[in-house]
Length: 357
Ligand SMILES: [Mg+2]
Image (cartoon, rainbow, N blue to C red):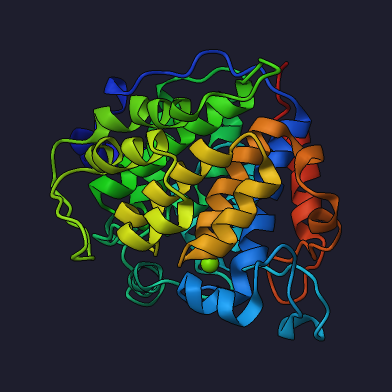
């Protein structure tokens, strides 16, 4: 990837620790991808509402709501999170590895539901203006790359090498050419690798979630400062600094998710999305259903926070721990007329990238 050199001089993949051998199972890999799709689908129709408003209208949401895109039935349909994650999987299967040109073209090939600002600007630059993939990324600290990054680890399961981090950096900067975006993707992929490989019968302790994320994200951060959008808190620093300053104390004090997320905000800005997702995982990661329900009910950009939380708890606990009613009623759609495609892609991915126990 000759054109990626400028990214690697900014974020040096050789400084990021390598995950050890990722011994895992098809059940965990399926759990990761279906957890993502289920979380997205549960939040999808009701995103962009603040949690108290949402609660006043719907009460506590624990299942799919009547869906206008599916004849009013209570079934799960995708938004951009599921679409872009599974189109990444399509591209990986087609090339057997990450091909940034094909990934960019795939992202621009079909209609994206609920497309974000940075992603629209990327599509405009790449497809409409004909910019090459390495010049179409936007300077955005939105969560649009983090939400779809999970499948990038699949080709690396048998033997994680520096190429894993090169792929994560390129797949992120392709659309979100920004330090917080790259650090968040790297931290989250490190966390997913650890979830897939977790071998104890006991769930990880609360602060393990933060420590694991930070171990991978920190080396990427050069100190570029970010500031919150809310005036309720004062802060200037990196995503990792925010986690130490606000999320760790909230985990120790057992601050309720809703209370913390209302104080920090929990929308599409990474300084909001990542703290929300990590707090939910640290406090509810032992219970996949409870973790996803908290993400859906207690956060603003709830489809994306639930997709991120869903991928992590699915990777840790496996497909069978993701409630059956959510998996059974997921249409598995990624485009207008491809119901079931999510399930076909997962079967194919496990043939092409078989996990090693
Ligand atoms: Mg979405």
